[in-house]
Image (cartoon, rainbow, N blue to C red):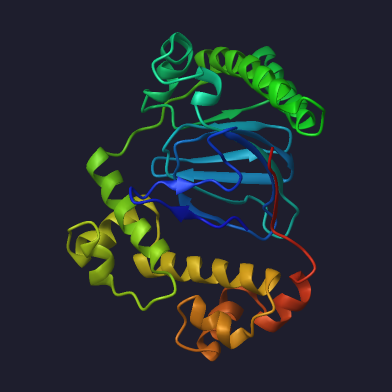
Amino acid sequence: MQTFITDQNHVEKIDGMTTEFPYCMHERNMTDFVVPWHWHEELELGYVEKGVSIIRTLHQEYTVHQGDGFFINTNVMDTKLNGNMGKTALEINHIFHPVFIGGHFGSRITAKYLNPILHNQQISVHVIRRGSKEADAVLDQLVLLREMNHRPNQEILIRNTLSSTWLLLLEEIEKHFEAPQLIETETQNRIKSMLSYIHRNLGEKITLQEIAAAANISGREANRIFQKTIRQTPFEYLMSCRLSSAKELLSRSDLSITEISYRCGFSDSAYMGRQFRKACGMTPKEYRQRKQSGASETAVYT
């Protein structure tokens, strides 16, 4: 599972992303993993190698089937989950900062080829479905781009291949994009502030009033906004994040179950055990035995 860290502006920092080479590839196993709500400046271009992936934004839900791809624009709030629970779901994700293609801020390439997409609020997520000439060309390039990560001189090869892929994506979006109905900016800013507060204080005792105060609103308004956008109450979302964090620690650490329960914000291990069984159908110990040798996500950093 990827660790989600935000800066002082509540923007996520991507594992493997550097200023020297602002690109990385994530090979993500979505079989038993839910990506928490998050957002970042980097763009995402990827495809589902196996199974079905669901991408949810504040505006819409997108289903991406095996062999199809997706584009997620800069600073789009989204969450991902397995679209066919119990079945294997694998995703290949290329993540890069716009400057990787544009060269520098304010360049002609940025103005002509990037900004029309980056500044279009209607383009949050675009599903690339095989079957059209434009979509097939983009998806073939994404598969090729994955191979670039393992070749000599990969830095130049990746940048050139990604630039060519971007040109094809522009054509694909122009011909096949369907715009969703948008949610007002004020609501988006409020939910971002509350989600950031939850992620930063996951291991602490959190009240509804504290979550609401992060967005300078009442608890009642916080509930309304969560239900409208996230489609969960604040505490339902908080519990899902705590359980996801517990799954990661159970899979990748030798910490005791009691220590994990405290680190994830549960009052004690018994309470975590009840919530874990309710959500996962097994105890934390059983989950650890099943997953200890596996990893939820492998990232390849160039």
